[in-house]
Amino acid sequence: MKKSISVILLLCLSVFVIGVFTVYGDVTDKDKCLQFLTDYGWETDGDVTDLADITVPQTFDLVYESYNAMQLKSGLDLLPYRGKSGKRYTFIVTNYPVDVGETVYANVIVIDGKPVGGDIMTVSLSGFMHGLGENNAIN
Image (cartoon, rainbow, N blue to C red; front, top):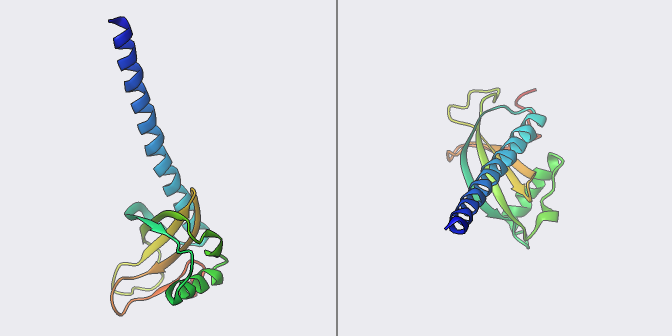
């Protein structure tokens, strides 16, 4: 009986520890994203508005070639991450220098726990997207 209770307690403790590491793992990636954005001069409210699984394609089509060209302008490059899976974190930008009449978002691509790319964008048909380092609207 004591052995059964010990096993149950050990299992409960294991589940708790795994849960704690999972939660703090996500927070760590989020914190890395926030620091990544700060390094480029962007501020957010700190809340993740969307979190999506992504895979960088092995072969880039025209869309990904254009997106990577935008990354290169910001000193980033997705080519080394072809075929890899990761997450896309989305935040609301709070310091966009111009009132564009809609919410401005920052996306950060995280692969293997490291921010490797991202963009600043709006979602309307007349909206925009630019690289993290292309903040000429700020200067």
